[in-house]
Amino acid sequence: MDRFELQRDVGWLIFDVSRLLMRSFEKKVREVGLTPHQWRVLLQIGRREGQTQTEIAEETEIARAPLGRLLDKLEEQGVIERRQDPHDRRAKRIYLVEREGKTFMEPFRQQAKEQFDTVYGKLADSELLELIRMLDHIKANIQS
Image (cartoon, rainbow, N blue to C red; front, side):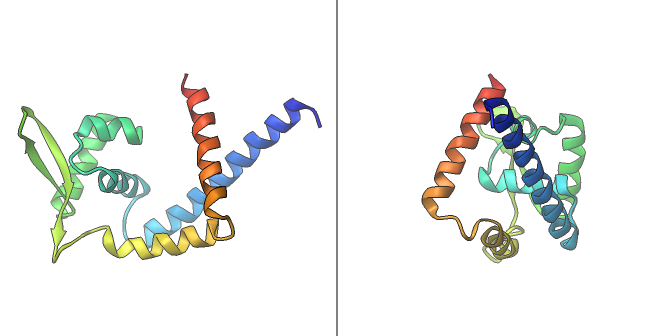
């Protein structure tokens, strides 16, 4: 097998794994009454609370206007809250709402853990770290 065939096979495998992960992910998300976009935004907020709408838009690759509507809906549902940025009166920071010491996302962590254990369970931590390193390298090549 020449290098082109290896690269092609890696590309197809990454695409196929991504597609299967997304299908499984979307099924689980719909079971809890969220859209995939809502879930993605909530995960991003949970990863680093206090981001602005612009930062979330950049990280999730959702345009600002649709993201604004999505955030409005999540705020109406009492899942997130917007707080004034103490250093910039024009900006609002976005946080997950806590109830009884837990955020909306807490109950889903166990489901996510079980899903990840199914997907990655047979890989050692060192293999996962190497996979992350390689995928980060590929991502950086694409973005440059």
